[in-house]
Length: 197
Image (cartoon, rainbow, N blue to C red; front, side):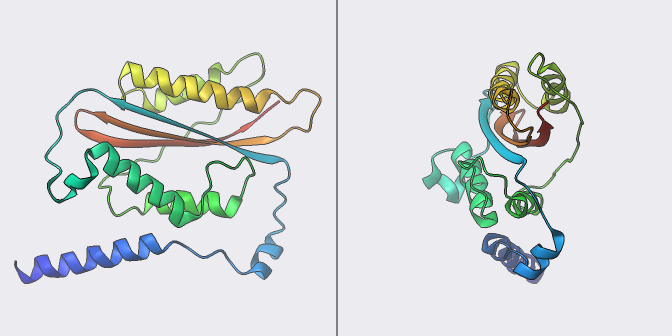
């Protein structure tokens, strides 16, 4: 192995170790100065998996995982853990939400990360604006079956967000994880905030 390759390996090992360590929350006095009032916010999470039957390279030393899907799911789970992001909780935690996004964007296992966004409003009468925006964002990255799964997951999250008649209006911060293989590409993630009217 050349010196350059060993140096690169050491650097990558350090990057992975730093990423896996996670990020500590800011000191309490810093949070107090921010005066974050998130009582009108909640979190909804969904996950979708898809595959287009395209072939993938051998797992090599990762063979114990059984599949590339298991490798990717393990990395995603570690991303959540290192950010302290609890996807089973409906309570919105802005610090953990931000940390999860930062951990995802700095994940040393992904070569290309694309960030794009849309702003839409939904109501109890129509979730179509959100469905249309997500279709526009990920439609080219997934198969039609996977897109249907994403839309169904989005509908469930969206319906929870708009079922607030007679209750306090809340912002629903939605995290939708998509694990997919299309033409040998892996992994997509969508997240957003929806104000339920």
